[in-house]
Image (cartoon, rainbow, N blue to C red; front, side):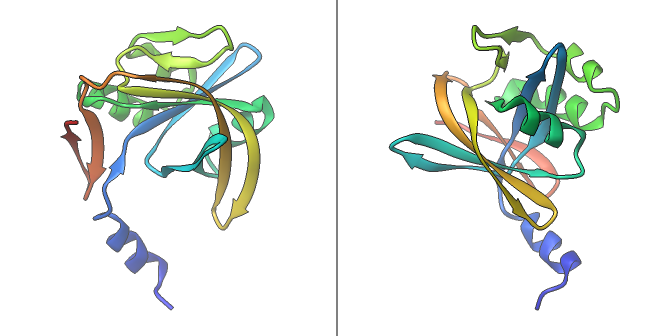
Length: 159
């Protein structure tokens, strides 16, 4: 079997769309950068997001029962870096224009796509939790190039 270090090295070359997953638990806003995201079903619309169980946001997203996936655009590189580096959760939201939707979702105004989800499932998977999200709303801005992360670098993909 492959060891963890070799697996991580190989995974560096798998491009991933860069997203910020956000949630609100009462007055507390939480969020984290993530690249492990994919579609699960079109009927009903569902996606999955893989989140490390040691991440401070993981348990709060679970308890909230809702989360928003903000797929970042090329202008959001600084926001992605800031979210990754900031140690204080509330300070993560100081960069970028964050809007609250009617359902309480936290949306980055410059994102190229957003998905507002209710938590439909939570599957343990090694170091991560697979959160299944039932997509309740989506907004798309096709004119914005999606931000991608591969081999330690940000790049873009235009539609």
